Length: 83
Image 1: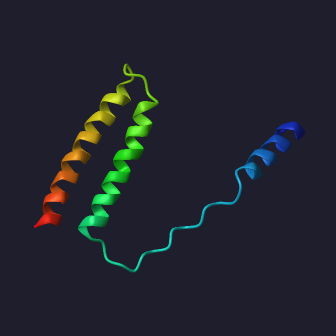
Image 2: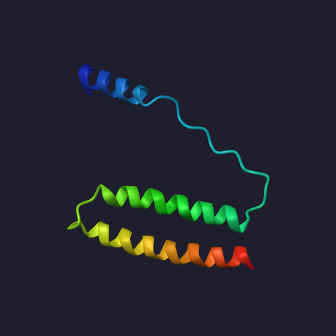
C-alpha cells in the first residue's frame, strides 16, 4: 500500500466514528403490541427504501411483496390484541 493509500485508509477508517454498542437486552417480555410496533417499524423502513428505487427495478417488486406480507401479519396481530 502506498503512503497516500495508507493515509486515506486510516482517515476513512476513523471517519466513521466509534462502533455502536450492542443493544442491551430488555427485561420485559415481548407482547402483541410490542410485536405490532416492530412490524410497523419494519414496514416504514422498507417503504422508505422502496421509494428510493425506480419502478423498473426488480427489487421494488420484491419489496412490495414483503410489505404486503407484513401488512397481513400486522392485521393478524391486531386481531389477537383485541381478543
